[in-house]
Length: 170
Image 1 (cartoon, rainbow, N blue to C red):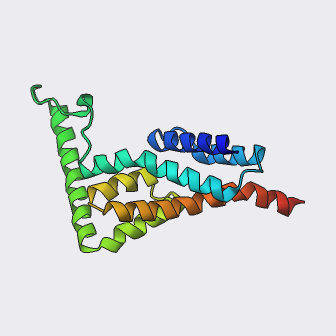
Image 2 (cartoon, rainbow, N blue to C red; image 1 turned 90 degrees about the horizontal axis):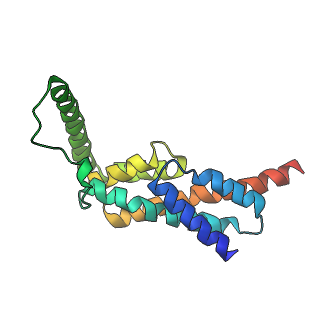
Image 3 (spheres, rainbow, N blue to C red; image 1 turned 45 degrees about the horizontal axis):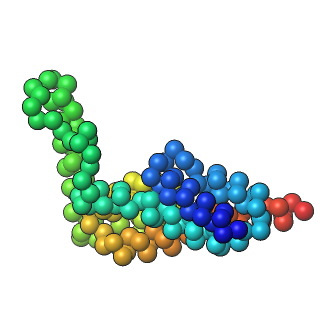
């Protein structure tokens, strides 16, 4: 059982870093094959792994994490009409993000509520709210608490669902 908890931790960290991996499908498959693993333990472990995997995104949003060189802009290339259009688009996006940051500073509960809903429901996407939480300067403790509680609720419900469904059908 402990081995499967470590596997679940690894898969949840991987799915947090690479969103192409679905930890929800893994969790349903694991619980369906191994009903002896407690759903609460799985929910806690997967939530812990998800938050551990989202920390680089939080710090990148905060500006504390240095991004790889290929993601940086090259200044020596001449500006084409296409690049000028893209710069104008990104300028609008940056202005929108600055507006969001300013509103979050005026209303700190707004980001906490958004983060809580996102961590449970998944809308807005949890990865996006993770980056946004770092960008607007949400305190790390609040980010970890809100994210861990919400993700634990989400994954405990998902882990308990196959057992509940089997009980209702019999």
